[in-house]
Amino acid sequence: MKQLDLFKLPKVENKKGKKGRRQAKKLSIEMPIMVRPEWPYEYIKNTDFLPSIAEDLSKQMAIGLDIETYGLDPYVDEIRLVQLSREGKTYLLDYGKMGTIGPVSEVLKDGPLKVGHSLQFENKMISKWFGYDFYPQFCTMTGAKLINAGQKKFGFKLVDVVLEYLGVELDKTEQTGDWSQELTERQLVYAALDSECPLKMHPDMMRKLNRMKLKDTAFLEFELLPAVAAMELAGIRVNEKKWQALADENEIKRDNLFSQLQEMAEEAIPGRGYNFNPRSHIQVREVLKAQGLEVTSTAVDNIKRFHKEYPFIELLLEFRELQNRVSTFGSAFLDHIHEITGRIHPDFWPLGTDTGRYNCSNPNLNNIPNDPRWRECFIPAEGFVYSIFDYSQIELRIAACIANDSVMLRAYREGIDLHRLTAATIYGCKVTEVTPAQRQASKAINFGLIYGMSAETLMVYAKNSYGVNMTIEEAKRYRTKFFQKYRGLKAWHSEAYRIVDREVVQMRTIGGRLRKWADNKPWITHLLNTPVQGTAADGMKAAHVLLYNALKSFGYDARIVNVIHDEFIVEVREDLQEDVAEIQRGCMKKGMEVYVKDVPVVVEGGTGSSWASK
Image (cartoon, rainbow, N blue to C red; front, side, top):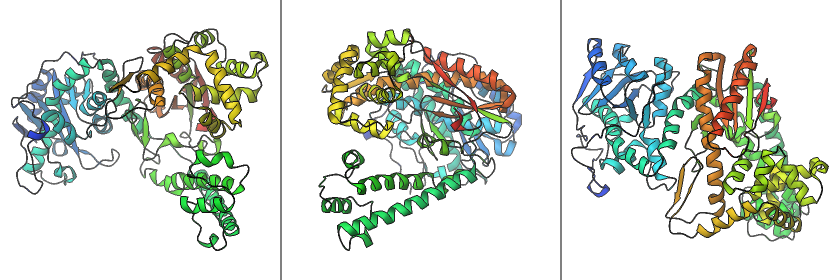
């Protein structure tokens, strides 16, 4: 791929200058007149003009890019219009009529910087219908999010960002118009603005990214877009019968628990059981009060500790969990299976969280229960296997680097299991004498306390996440011993408490990704987990780019189908699994090592017949 410094391009001036929000051009959707493009546009329906357009665009350093489609489904809805802007002019190529964009494809594949908004969609549609990725690219939605650094001062749709950066209020009523008919002037004006505006915003956004030292983070996010689009297109396969059986089983269990809760409510308060609603906090408090327990909140963290004394609470919590699974992972989950591909194609959002970690929706694969019965429902195609690898204790390793904790750093460099080391510390035994139960408890302690949990929260977290019971006195004692052992972590936490009350608080990852708090006070946990989880996200994304590019030559024989937290799942043809596993392990290690240099990066995993195989 041709490399280009995205941050040293010639300035594209907006002749009218940037306007503030109060001076924005207002447009009522009831008015027949739209805000018109500043640059003239040419509507191209004849392929004879394509060579000269390609030549003109290839001479530019940066061009605006947008597409209009017949719909949003890349497996059903084709591209109608390809809009390409250069300073002073916009070309509207009617692909729907011409059936090709000819030599202009070479401009997209390489050549000038392509500037657009929410380019993940363009990446997906162009890859599906034109059969290639386009490079290099600059996404103004991504840039705006990075500059905003988690403050949420404005929205990130094109209309919001254009208003913020150009002072122009766009009319988006044509977004849902009919693009299958002869295009109207309003549609052409709308389409021209969608490629012209990102190119105009690019210089100011580029300067801000440079000034805020976000250049490297932005470049990583831009390179990632084709890889994420390819993962969405690939989709993931689900065993429908197995999933439906689990869904039915959970519904039956939920209904049985509901009946038992009604009986308990009736026993506690005669007459209440017949209309008892376990989702009503008021009614739950009434029943608990009748049983001798008064609580101000029925949240899990508040009532979980009483579950041994009150069977009602035990059943209530089990009911809530099952109810959540039924609503999230019930029969309706299978509605996401695409009728053409037979797969689920979730939406992945590389900047879906303030820390920079991926998010997923429609459906959210990140929330699939870590239970073999559910995960074995996700299966590769016939003749394929899953190659599943993740990072070993990556957040603890990054925390050791950020806090410069000498004990943790030495343990990782010498290959000592940190969970065993912590267990030996809190239980007063040798590392070689640590039992499996003690090591399990130390997992909760390590992962909970690096982010500043209190003893009370640690007690609940250990039970809920690791099935480890500890009293409040034990939790306090473990917490004290933990920070006596890891003094670097303690100093790092003290620094977080020192800066939390500043007027403007900001944190960066090792790679420079920025998160700011200006209008609200951050939680201590945010100040601690942002640089750790954000650095892990940076490493994951670098690995994603490397792995995607490394697997391109395999085509459909090896594709990334899921990314979850610190794990990559690749669907690979059976006879290629050893080669691909080695590539996957190498790319993951190399990507994370860009940011994690002071301790070894360890990648673990293997291949199998389902997501549960690892």
